[in-house]
Image 1 (tube, rainbow, N blue to C red):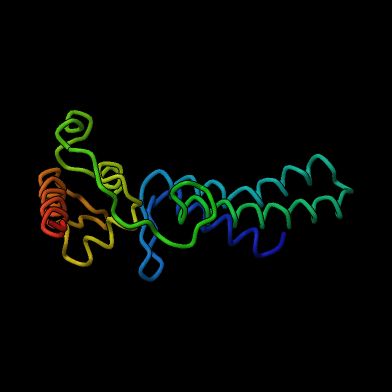
Image 2 (image 1 turned 90 degrees about the vertical axis):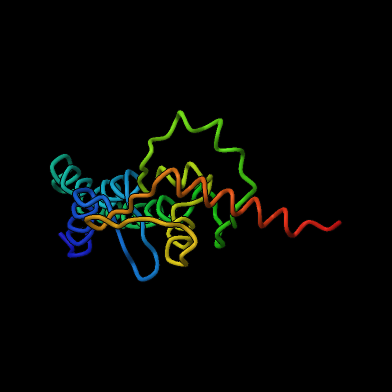
Length: 169
């Protein structure tokens, strides 16, 4: 079995267990990261399965392994870096958001990174940027962000005040 499949299996297992990833400035955590972990494990699992089914199918197994490497890589990229799953190479800026009062009952008082991103209707990476820039208060406990709903509401109020201050009269 090629080392690439074994390395993908190991990386996938680590992502599945940890549920978080940090590559330079990029950080992500939660279910998306765990799904990427499972996706990265597919090449080796498929090769083992096909080798059992077709013991003499060396070319078929090799082709399927190459195809699953490419598929796993593309799927991992799309899951981690694209919010919509459509090809896009720029992160959308913070949009005008609906009033949080109508959404408060659907979110806990302290949120994970993924929940905060859904609350603000932005990608998780944008929430991390807001935290790193000092625009959004958050605590990092055991390598995971915890963000209070109060901090998110204050951020939204500040955004709305800034937007109103820039209005042309």
